[in-house]
Image (cartoon, rainbow, N blue to C red; front, side, top):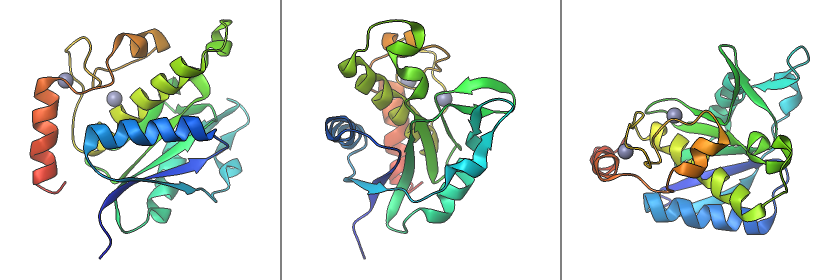
Length: 182
Ligand SMILES: [Zn+2]
Ligand SMILES: [Zn+2]
């Protein structure tokens, strides 16, 4: 049997320095090997022309079907603007205790807010969104500790205020969930 790992599925073009950094950050937080794979999903069927955005729930569902069996968790990395029906946009989405999640770079770019691009900051934000969603997939709920990665974020500024790590309580809960094999 193959060793369990977290699999990132890249649905969109990402530079190597970005994916490399993200792989490092994730393996550092979760202590699983991280493996990057190319996506062959056709995202166009999830495009909503009225909203000019992509339906996150639909993408999440098909990602489950393509998730490799040796994956502890599968995370789709995207570049498109994501929404769920009740929200204007989302940075990412994952079911609590689920096997997969998605995260998008789209709303994390400074350029979208009329600010100079900052690649290091962009990678940092993307890592935070991915670790947060992975946290949900391991069964963690939102945390109120101000700098904990599991604190909910609506704006990029919220992301920038968080650390890239779990607080003491969330880390303990994560360890417990991992031991239970969730
Ligand atoms: Zn969340
Ligand atoms: Zn926490």
